[in-house]
Amino acid sequence: MTDAGVPPSPPRLLPDEVHHAVGPGTALLRLETTGSRQSLLDGAWWPRSRDVEQEIPPLVSALTEHLGPITRVGLDAAAWNGIPTRLVIDDRVVHLDSFPVGDDTVLITRGDKDHFSLMVVPPATTPEAARTAMARAVHAGNITQAAEILLAELPHPAAPAVGTAPENDEAPGR
Image (tube, helix red, strand yellow):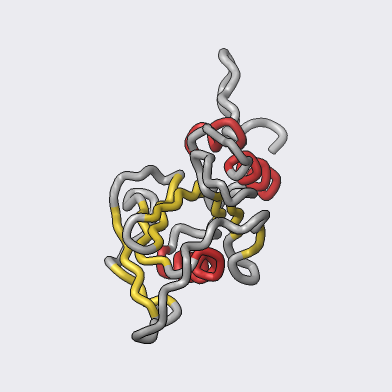
C-alpha cells in the first residue's frame, strides 16, 4: 500500500537479463535483455500448469519486483482454468481480464496504460524447447509474434507416413 504524501517512484524499465524461476519448482520468467522495449514481446513465461490461482500470483510478485505494482493481467479464457475477476497478491488487488489474446500471450498492465506482453510457453513443453523459444522471444529487436515463435520452436507430433497403418496394442510382438 502507498502512503499519502509520498511521491510515486519513476517508472522502471525492464532489467537486463532477468531469467529466473518465479518460485522454487514453478514457472520460469525471462524478460527482454534490454530496457529499450523495442521488441514485439517484453518477455516470456513458462507456467507449470493452466491453473490461474496457482500460476498468476508468483508471476505478478516477480514482475512487481522489477516493474513496480501490476494492476491487471489479461488472459485467454479458452487457455486457462477458471479465471476469477481479481486476485489479492502481496496485499494488492490485481484485476484479471479474460479476452481472446491467444493462449500464447499474457498481457500485463502496470499503472493505467503501461502494457507488457509476455509469450506463454505451454506447460508441457520440454525444457530444451522452452529455453529456445524463450530466448528467441526476448532477443533484443525481436519482431516475431509469440504464436510464430512457438510454432517454429516447439516439437510437433509426427504425422503417420502415407500408406502406413497406425500402430495398435494388438500388433505382433507386443
